Length: 360
Image 1 (tube, rainbow, N blue to C red):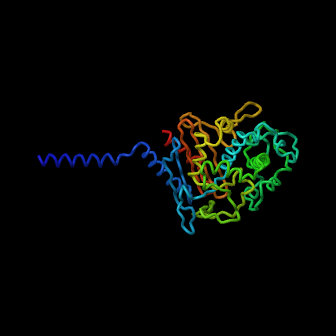
Image 2 (image 1 turned 30 degrees about the horizontal axis):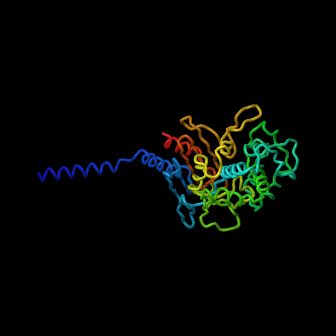
């Protein structure tokens, strides 16, 4: 009898131990994603990366890889380490713009001159919506010197870089991705709200969404949790980037954030807290050219489909010492945020790999 009891106990203990080693489907996905993340880090020689994934509004995976700084060695923490998010800043600006639309402070279909009557007159008029959708004909950076400009300027001062240049095409006839259009749009938002842009975004977006680690990338002050920024070199190890001043183009590419904060932003599209569903629809509906062809871009978000054929809204970011992506899957209620501190890292391809895992 005692032998049977002991044998049963051993069998029960063994089965319990075995069951505890079996991953749940979600744990298995995370384990696979971690392996891919480490492979991506090695292959791309990325110094540091943060990844956060949420589903149904709850974080299911948040992890840091590599180093935020190499000297002194500082680990990446997805809830603390502040990366340059580059053009994901446009998504932040879009949410702020949606809030202004809800509050009837700005009209997407109004001429930009309604809000900026002193802006130099162009051959053609263009609207706030066209600015947000890269359809206004505003030019892109002329060269790398303009892209990596290290001169601190206000948004208003930044207009001087392009305001006297002719439009490169008649608004609505072509799509030309650029950041200067968002500089101009942020100036219009300042005038319409009668509030400095960064202050407006902080009060209207960051505070209510509890994005406590998202701030302007101030070039002249020490920000303790800001990571170091790297670029590829001819040598094996990436090198530290030269300084850059992004204050004037904060709306298009000048915010710092954590991967966990960026997921909070993505969840605003799924579970709106500060803007209406109607205003969000304006952001995630592809605009179209005068020909009727869709551009695949709304306002602050690219609009595509996932590997499963379901809707997918996203924005990539490429800046000095930054390669980033935010992806939102509304049907699956999934949000993925990837932030790195290396120029040119292939994050969109890596994002597709994570999509294949988490949408499986």
